[in-house]
Image (tube, rainbow, N blue to C red; front, side):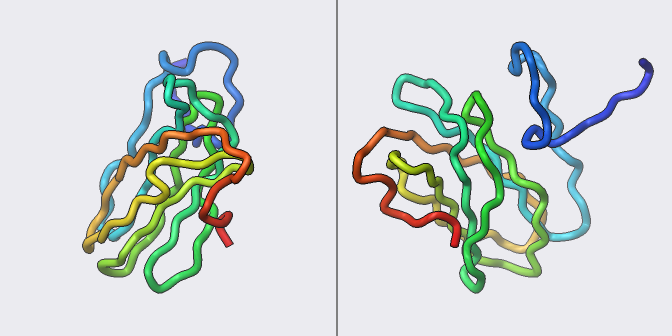
Length: 133
């Protein structure tokens, strides 16, 4: 009872209200890197569950870094980045489009937790961006 345990949300299933739980942000490290987090919601604010969050660096292929929970929240694990890098982040779920289509920025050398959000809309056309491959 005197100890606490933290686990990544993507590895847990919670019964009850998630807003009451504290959110842990790891302390900065001396290693340069990036943690990505944010929400995917419909225009009315409802979270979209099961959205695949993809990330690529300019010199690497895209990869699946997180999946949204029932509230539409996502958080990636820490990723080491050896220097400054162009980062692209996008969301993918069959039958949905996202605004913005992607987030694109330069991550300069250092440790950072970056928040980016998406607004989802159901669409028969689906996402214009591919899954993480």
